[in-house]
Amino acid sequence: MSKLDLVIFGATGFTGKHAVEHLARGMKEFADGSVTWGVAGRSKSKLEQILQEVSKKTDANLTNVKIIIADCGDYNSLKEMCAQARVVVNCCGPYWLYGEPVVKAAIESGAHHVDVSGEPHFIERMQIEYDKKARDAGVYVVSACGFDSVPNDMGVVFLEKNFEGTVNSVESYMSSELPPEYSKDVRERGVINYGTWESAVCGLSRWNELGALRKKLYPERMPTFKPKLQHRSFIHKYKNGWCIPFMGADNSIVYRTQRTLYEREKKRPIQFRAYVHLTSLLYVFLLVLMGSVLFLMTKTKFTRQLLLNHPRIFSLGFVSKQGPKDVVRKNTRFNVELVGRGWAPGADVESTTPDRTLVAKVSGLDPGYGFTTTALLMCAHTILTEKHLLPESGGVLTTGTAFAKTNLIKKLQENNTTFEIMDMKH
Image (cartoon, rainbow, N blue to C red; front, side):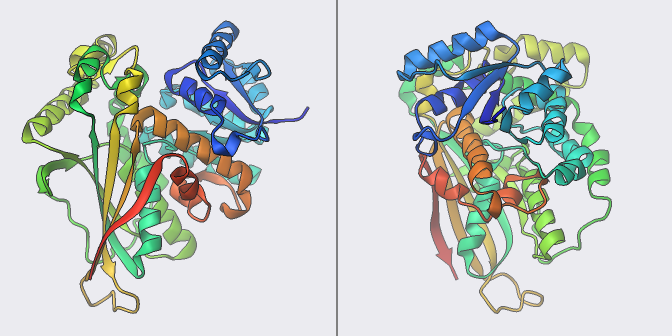
């Protein structure tokens, strides 16, 4: 039986549906029909319905797209699905609940695996449990292939390639903007889909386990490289706005990339911090308030259920079970500004302070779903077509570790994402 190049698992979910739509619209990399793909999930009728909806929306003929029945609660069905794929594109979250059996089945079946998890607990535990098994099988397992954490992880790769010297540290400032004429649409259906909220609730409920997990993942500390990148004050000003620490997966993802490169290539690791950039202190206050309430309420089963049952209330209207309207998604722009500091070529990095600054920017539209599904599919496509440029052994990897030497950034640039150098100061 010949294998499909890609299988979209969880195709009936919000992210999975957008992945199917991207393929149906014939992205450049898939337009010639040379990449074969199928969809997978628990319900045949729902999968058929998704294909019909996407076909009607895109005017694409999807009658030959293979439908595979697979359920996270039925391990044999997962193995049968993975056995039919070269790459499993896993859109079925929350991943700490449903992700592990798919990773396990993919490795045992010899299928590569990509997902959009932004859940550090799941991602790091998969490295502990399955990295050696994946390397032994020659399989690539790459998480965080969406907005968490491609702009920052690959953004650091892009900045370093353009730095012309030695990079000591990178600070990242993430922001988004939506024209005010869409405010009414935001009030009706928010800007975040319920699945993203569910993953955040699940991830935060296990936050206190990360310390022990990371000690197991990295029992020995890396050497300290100077000057050490210091934490800024919890609220600090940057350009025309205010910033607070970003609590997503990006810091841990970039750390894992840099640590892996240090251990494998003895390359000086880049220190990294991610921040959220907001235009006013009021927005900062609201985000901190929402984040604090969310964090505290994830600590008991009763309050977690309240969060899951009433997302509109506890997210201040930003989350809805229907997901944001298309007009909101398509007009939301994201910017990730990366400020790198280091030394010019030939400088004595041991006894001098950094004297060079380079600013790079990654930007695009629809960060949570449009960019995320584009990046996810481009990661899958890169495994299919540029395996010779990936690390030889396979394993559980970050995007920066897996794709640093590939054309992933070029593919993203050809699909409505901008990577650019903004400023160089000597």
